[in-house]
Image 1 (cartoon, rainbow, N blue to C red):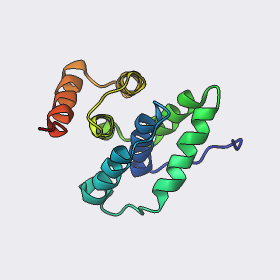
Image 2 (image 1 turned 60 degrees about the vertical axis):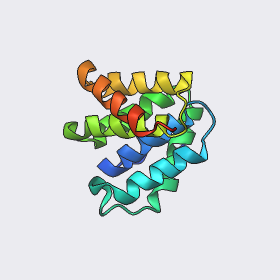
Image 3 (image 1 turned 90 degrees about the vertical axis):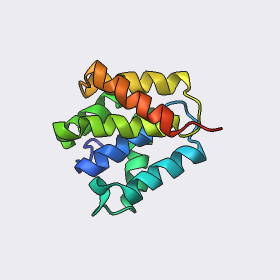
Length: 140
């Protein structure tokens, strides 16, 4: 890991949060990657985003996960890059990625808890965001 971490754009920070949730259980599922790509392709916040940056941001997240204080460093980068008005957006995107495969694994739940705390997501808002993600990803 280089001594200096890259600075992130707000969109990079959103991608980093989604990748972190996906990688949190050490299994990056195709459904999660498809969910990330779908959100980047369709959400207004990513309108001018260079989709080729996803790989670089993902590699940064993976490298940070290998470091002892990597999660703390990741959240520092995210908090620095992400305007407060996008904190709930980041949490909503994270919930959608976690719910994409239809199963919430313990590491994903712990990562969502970390994100809630690091981004100071109001508990009532978090419950509403989580409920929305759950119902969007239900299957018959």
